[in-house]
Figure (cartoon, rainbow, N blue to C red):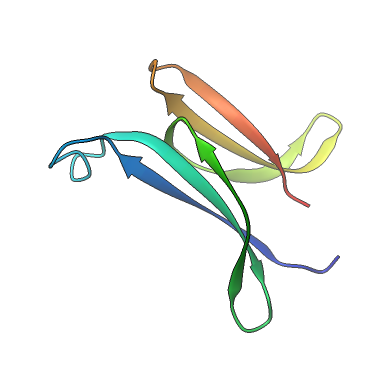
Length: 86
C-alpha cells in the first residue's frame, strides 16, 4: 500500500544498577512506526519476554512479508517471535 513501516526494538535492563551497562536484559518491546511523510507515528507495539538480538524482514514458507525477532527467554532458551510485516 506504499506505506513505510519501521520496526524498532527497545531492550529493558534487568533490575540492578549496572545491568544496562553490561547488557543484562530481561525483556524487550518491539515498536512498529508508520512514516506519515513528515514524521513517525506509533502504529503498534508488542512486549517480548526476553532479550532481543536482532530483527529481520523476509519470508517464511508461504508467508511473505514477516518480521522475525529472535530472543533469549528468561529460561535461557532461544526463541523466535513472528510478526506480519505488511
